[in-house]
Length: 268
Image (cartoon, rainbow, N blue to C red):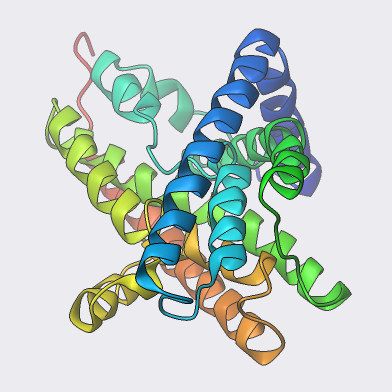
């Protein structure tokens, strides 16, 4: 029995509603994002001012925009990831997932897209208002770039999920993967452009980052939404994201199949 699009829509809705139940956590997230947004914008703008007029094409306003768009994305794009799948493998609950008509990576992905949509609306939108009032932001040049920006966010959420899903799949072969998850998170946040723009990296490090999906998580949506990339440049960045979603999706399907063959649940 195959799941149809309505099934995935219901799963996404469930992820949206599940995230919406944590109202206090959402409120705390807004406050935390706002505070760190002020700190990040002030530090990065100060760094640009201290270095001169611009750094790698970023002036103070562009740097402020980079910082605040990063705060917008922070709740939606799960850069630090999760360990739910690894936990279910360890307890054996993953066996129930394999009995369902929807493959685990697709059901979890649909729910995560719903979670990301709620986070973008509730935690992200206030950051745009606060960032615009505090130090200023730049925005897409036109409606096409706005659409590409929103598509880019959805693709970033999918890439972040699929990357962490693949790391979680290591639990089929290695029971304890917390160290691997931690190392993955450190590399992902650095190469995603979460701390400083990837465009600030030395040439060799920027080339290394470009060979990974990580810039597609944060740097790419910021480039499009801030107007740093527009027109064909923005479309090319989205095309790269689509390629990563397809590649990681195929990897998730193959790894899930291999893990299913490898799985042993105690007691039968």
